[in-house]
Length: 475
Image 1 (cartoon, rainbow, N blue to C red):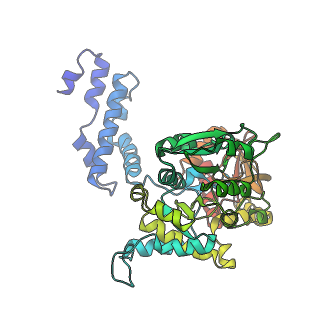
Image 2 (image 1 turned 180 degrees about the vertical axis):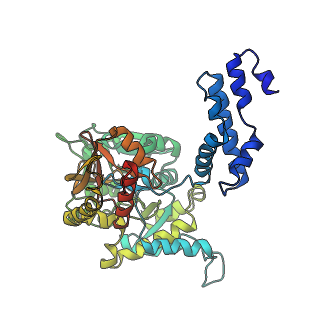
Image 3 (image 1 turned 30 degrees about the vertical axis):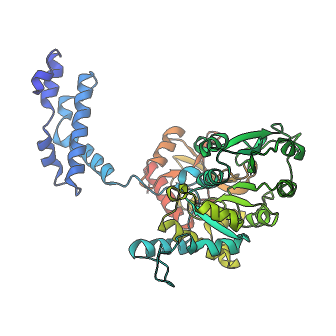
């Protein structure tokens, strides 16, 4: 259909504007000398721009005819092509103070893990090849010994995340059977992951015991029947019940399971291999402590407090873990060579007391306030005078968060650079930070933008300074 036919019924002014829209080939000729990009991206950018102009004109809000020229359209086309060429998956600067930020990739990997990723990605590997026998091997054997040595478990298995670990355990041990859980532990975490729904998917029947705030050993024992397959304990992750509360000690739950020959499974959620009290945080049971308490199966995440890649770790008694390994669902949930390489590298760091402290998640939790303050001062020294007429700037005391669903009530003392723009609205300033070449994500509190320097790396301070100067148009 021709442009004139499509424009029938519109005013002469609209028809004139429609005829002024340049052709696709004409725009391609304009832009070729200005960009280096795959032709498909350039053509898509041109078509999108022209379609937007056409729609705007037909709605009565279109450009003036003089704006439909090479001089005006080429800069916009260049922006659109650049956006298409740029990777959708980008690095950002996390200035929120949340160490394990679920929406920004969770835990950062140490350099040793990055070396492992590069090595296995660019070369063939022994992923499922046993170098001793020359026959097919198991990918899980590459990290199982290390995992067992670290946790004290008899056997271990790694799947793609902790939700998968819980699903696999329930499907293996409780499909068609009953699982007893305290009512106060029926949590929902990020992404609408709910324990009752996961249990339903596994084919298990949920048996709730106790009240929301108080559950006793007699509640568990009174619910045990011939159909009971598991006693399940679930970490409450990102919420707390305080006040008049009670829950059954893990040792008592294990004793009850032994008495009735019923396995006890503990979903630790984030999970930790170190005592977090050394960072000034509340006591959280470590995986090693839970294994020593006699729990039959423990599940936890690899990319949260552990400080590794996304993974779900399952450890426990060999007889039970062997059953879980044979579940056909395991193939759908298995990890790839990159996760294995990163996980092995992180595991090995845990065996060296000095190197363990270099794991980014642990290092950020352990970072002293004076180190954070020095980092904040570096930033303010670089830009405070330059931004004087545009933005009020000061260093303030704040609290960082561990994140990742761990310890929601606890904060870590930190320092932030507080920014109150004078020449633009705070909402616009936040947008400009987010739309920068390297996006900077902070948090807004009390009508000011806070950049918490606990989670801003040393080599990112210069980038933050340059970005602030660019936003306010100073050098």
